[in-house]
Image (cartoon, rainbow, N blue to C red; front, side, top):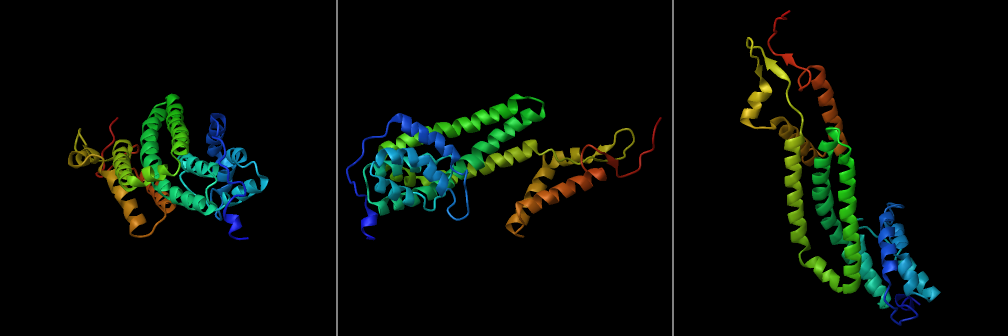
Length: 287
């Protein structure tokens, strides 16, 4: 009985899936994490996304039930790149491949995509887009959030469609394309993301000292002196402080956020940060 469960009853390859079905699964993939849980992660969303294709491929109800069962096993990958795995699995299901082979390919493909997706989106595209459009929004432009949505949603949808059709046409050969340069691509994208985040910290880090030293009619602005030594020194110090607390002291990002919030409130209350100035040497009031 155990060996029979590893293959489908109907071993005849199914016809190619039509574009309408493939497109439907691309849109369903947006709901991949709708029922995310800690036991099987994205499994329920994965099955919901791929189900229209499975129903077209498996006309045998028992085979469809078997396919649904093994496609409901643990699954977790980057949500924007999931259609790459989907196309490969659908190609194998269509050819009625061995069930264990389908399982192995699904697990092998979902891992590298997680690292590539994180480097491509969370470390690169999203910080760059958010940095530019957030500044537009701060300046009162309604176009800021609209452009952010159009870029992030537009890029991921283009990738979803392209990866679905590419991997479905290539089948298991797409795995070779993925793994050939996955490590180099992930490393390069991560470096780019770190570089961009550093640049955003420098350009948009608005933390500046608001203290002055009385010096007759022309007080000495401490922030100007710091800028002459190293521009954006304060944002750099705060960034390195948080990095050290997370990396060396084991702090969580939430703790760092609360610490920065406390530093900001206390600093503004005593006039340390820009916006409320205080003089290190008393300055007489002039009428």
